[in-house]
Length: 557
Image 1: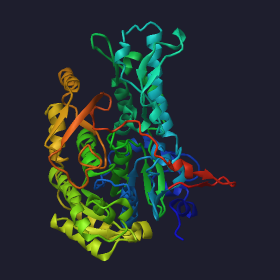
Image 2: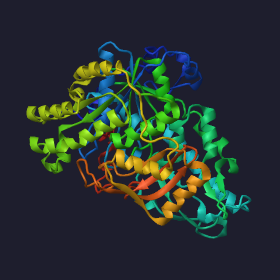
Image 3: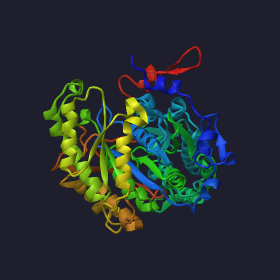
Image 4: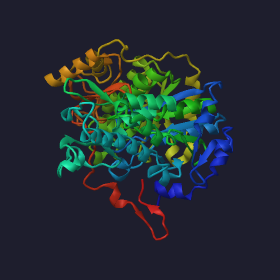
């Protein structure tokens, strides 16, 4: 009987976090320990690294995800361990898992098999409390808005134009749309509102894009929370909220240091979803890792059309980060799924379906190499049921695109199973590259959205209702036209229909809603049926999670 992810993680012998830090040259007095195996690294120490050389940044992305999962976080960990095994000074940077997926359908995000970051239970649950701090900051702002209105509304906030929403770090569809302030005059003014999941909050995006504590505070003050009757914007600084919000986030802003099963150092910090937010771990973690290691592997959520695009067009554009190479994770199962095979039939060999499904991989490779200009390798995340014929067909499909594909067995073998992949990544990082953006800054918001849809999604055009078009024009006129676009849409398809597999063309991307994230400095365009507060599935993962009589957590995956 094979061991589960949590069994493997709990059987591991972990180094004291001081030893992990010492391998990077980080002194004990720069650590704020959270127990024996995890710690925050002080911002004052990290700010002193600015004069050090910058390492090579490797972007981990993937094909369009499937219900079976492709193992992007697992491959990030495996590659980090493999780089260490071949003698490179390496680190990995991952997002913190949100409790919504942990208790819902997707599960945790600490890797899997013998390629995990640990302590797995801590990372997948409360960890160091960063998400609680982010939720508290967002909800404090919400409370201050309603309190200001209740106590005279000196700023003249139009209660119909309050856009700031409360947040919660679990999936709860019942809170998507709510009415606040019921119960009489003592409870404030009734109004419609709703909840988002923490990872969709603008505070989370700001947290991950901030370059310093001062930048964090400035961005928090820029958040537009409401408008007056004459449509004058009301910002968090107008409510004097940003100072207290920054105080709540001060300690959380320091990156979290942990280790892999093979003791490769890892920063796990921040956690925006890539289907409803920008999908990258914190800039502070990644930029600091680049001063501490020669190779840093970081992932962007979901496929290259979502997390990958936002990594380039939002994070790299605003911070100057430049990936030297990209790894596109693919699986035999995913290609068969995109070739039309039902989930129940994926374990059965079907080379013809796999070859049909490789159109999905081909489009992602074009995006990474031709649109973004990043050298790429395909990592085939191996599963035991993959057949030699299927693996050969997938390797051949990548080669037809001019890209090498490497079968990686890190899930079963740890870093040893990904050494060939690591060698190819090192080779790619030595090649010249010039990062390109999908659209220029001075293109209008509507045109930026259309460019993404046409160049990345293969769409013919985009559409929106008259009211949404008017809102976009208003944002353009108000001076926000230079901001990048953050697309919120289904991760399962290039289109807005999750049932359209492969690489659909000729479709139209409908922009359902527009949200200004002035502090994060992007404009969110919500497309199709995507929700910023997910719901739980019929059988949530929470039903399998438990604590035994010895206090040992079981059932996490």
